[in-house]
Length: 414
Image 1 (tube, rainbow, N blue to C red):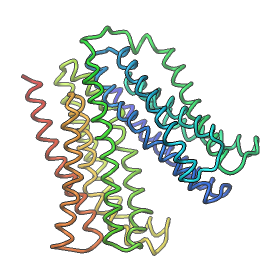
Image 2 (image 1 turned 90 degrees about the vertical axis):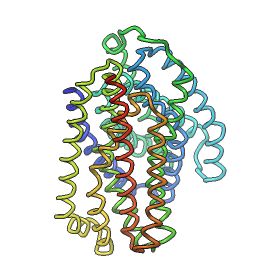
Image 3 (image 1 turned 180 degrees about the vertical axis):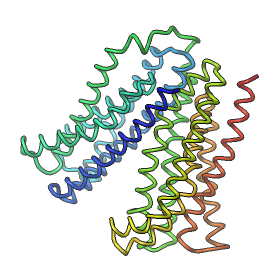
Image 4 (image 1 turned 60 degrees about the vertical axis):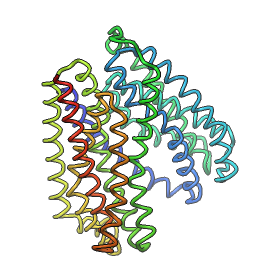
């Protein structure tokens, strides 16, 4: 548990640095690359990322299955087959779409090597998650934006490539370098991370089912925020949409990166290991620590938002975005439930019940939409109705998850 806590605290600092590097790099790119080329590049990367989502969805299933069975050989074997099929599908369908429909005017082989390199990157990052290599995970979080900057500088200033080329070169080389680094670290530590014999037979069918469910569950978490965007687009003004897109959504996204993603990176593997070993007291200790962590982060977010949200937004943006401060303050009051629900989802998945985790996510989306229309039609047509509905949906997910968590714990203790 101490190792997990250190990894999470370290992850917060590393993620903060990573966010700063990413943001600074985008500002830097805007000075040297045309707006059109940047739009095409980020659109292509977003599409590649979304189509490779199935591979990211495998991560939770790999972590849980390995913790319960220790059969890494068969897990990796199945994952390699799915990886190969996914990369071929992206090669055959997504790359032509980008070339001929989106209009990404770059040599065909740049796109091919992009999807291959990203496939390698996802493969190796999934492995270090499965083997609970916390230090490597944190270092890779920092290394990725740093390598992107270095390779872009090499491609743009030394190799004198222009337009989309330096962007794709930096993406390809960064992904390959990350994969090579993780491969070397894994080889050096293979004896310490893969020494146990399988505890039970690996159920390939169950593993694939859990991976598919985990992929949908992971994607539904993203859908929640885009649902908010669609509702604002339909019922509110462009000014209010701008407040949400430029200020509120980035603030919420950065808070997720700093304090929620580490739950799935570090707490989920630890919960899976302890659940497989039937260590109830250790599981309870982690739960209590996460509750304290969530309360401290949530309280700090509330205080800082109440004291400084309007001043900081006015300083960083302009007076035209001042209305977004009220939305940020409202978001701060329910962020504690976001962290706690992330822990509960992680625990439910650690027990092997991936379907319940998916149901809770889908319930969250449905309750969000239902609450919004109830508030909008019968109480207030203010933009805050979207935030209040979001608050209600996360609280409802927290309550359902709490019931499911207690049910699993009772069965676990028996």
